Length: 257
Image (cartoon, rainbow, N blue to C red; front, side, top):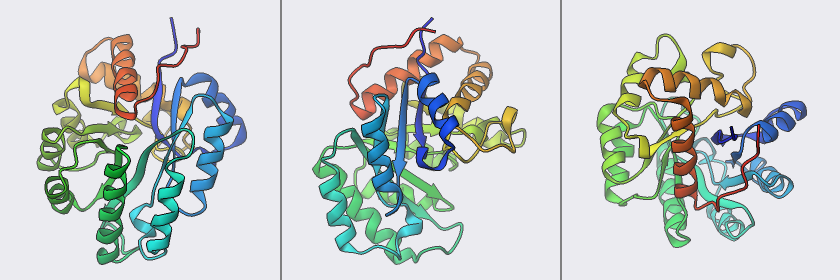
């Protein structure tokens, strides 16, 4: 059997060296995300270092008061770097007052424009901003990207799917009290489904309380396979194909177990 596990959203620069080495061996494709001034160069470096590591760069909504328009110009230059396959994570986060809403909107719009210019998918972060994100997806006609670590409601999910976006679930879908999140999972067509760890955050239930790592993605696959009552190998194949399609990744050689 071949390894087709993919982790479509992780922060490899935040995990321990041993966990990093294990993960790049056990997971066939990893997308590491650089979403602030410190993470971006680290993500680019990791993409160069490991053949199966791809890169997304952009500015998290928490960074909206720390950056300026020159940051976006610098980001544009880096989008041409080797292994960059997406812009983000970007979006709106009204859960904490870490950045003004005005600047969150401003830099979200600017990054959407950049992604469209270079025909790259966007990675959207939305927390406590369902209606606002939904309206931006509609008004900006966002049709190329993924809702990262989905935690929204049915209306946001429907809008995202109607526009052609993919939906990604993280380890929190395995938590006992995440019934609402699992109902959203049930609604997502398989050809739009992605899975992620968001390492080092949101460890799946089997390893909850420990620092997360990409190799833990297998627990989320196993859970989703059982919950949706589909064969695990079919789920692996589907998410693998979805990842290649969205991020325009050339099919790599698959490692044998």
